[in-house]
Length: 307
Figure (spheres, rainbow, N blue to C red):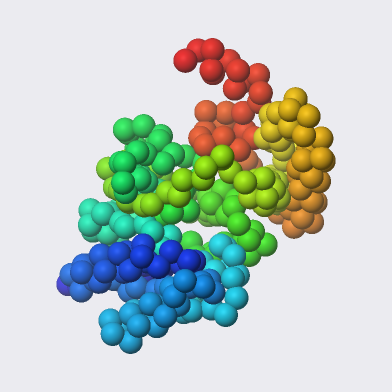
């Protein structure tokens, strides 16, 4: 009996050397593991689109180079909609999944019907350092890392994929929240790994990136939760950043930040369709990580003091 088809959907943007390494790794194991390889290139300027076309011609991957950068969620959805497999593995172009993960996906998702999304352990390819470290034991988490995650085709059909109003950031939490009320939890499995190149950003995260993320995060909250709960989570999430900006005298940035909070919340509220009550209760648990407003400032302080 042949193995179930896994559609590996890669979103690519201006990281050609890493894309080549990921494709070569997947092609090496493609036939034995029955992989369909799909690459959506978001209008790269470094020659990545040419690599996609070359590999489509020489190796038979599904190459989908785009003439504009659609952003993360729309770009990933283009790949998902082209997929033929019973199971989908979503990857960044610099994420190389272990053979153990590729082998495990069909059986794991067939046997664990309570799991909607499989979140592997993400490791820095150079240092081995963990990205989002949730410990050494499997556990339910709030959302996956966008670098790599797997799910059944049925979840794609039930949800329609990622929220295309999220150009960057927040799509992981949104998809996990919606999935919870349909197929189940997002499960972190540290025994299944992906190695990825995590870019080092000197000086921390640029403020414009923070603003994009802020819009997305607050859209997700107001879209998926009852608005009274969403407002509470929004306060919990934004206040530390807002207070930090005020304390440093960055009043202009604080105003911009607050504007993105309001803009994102209004966008989500316009599309408000709360997840089921059981899912709201699940996502209100302050022990659920990574935090996204589900933990109050006082709870955060208490947890730090107890460590």
